[in-house]
Length: 164
Image (tube, rainbow, N blue to C red):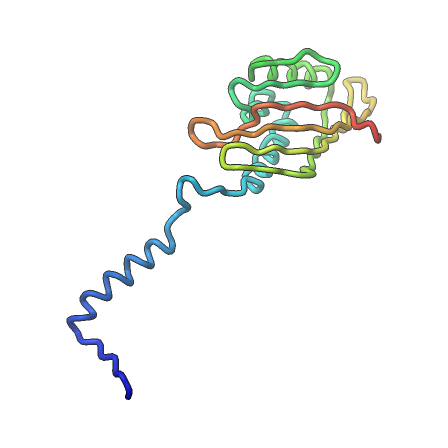
């Protein structure tokens, strides 16, 4: 016994909207609770940070930071605002002719509202007198989305890498 499936024109009027709706949902953006890997976004933020750094733009650098950042640099006072971190960077920029900043993320663990980054960074400095020096450090960063959903560094801790 063979069953023949016949689709009549009247059936097409019903099937076409169903197929159309299915295709819309199949291409829909992720559901709000869905977890999205922020690695590419964070990498882009670091590229922008480095552009600001190498331009000696302290205010631009702190655009990567949450408004109530906890910034813990080795050997210096902890800062709790983007303004105090910008002042820290301004002092560094004013006491050196130039610098080249490199950043490498070693690991990134994330959930919907939190990412933890372990990284290394190096800054090759040229002092005002032309003397060159290098600073190498490891860092641990806590990233969280701000009110607009943009990933920002909420906590940044860095110190010298003991293997260097």
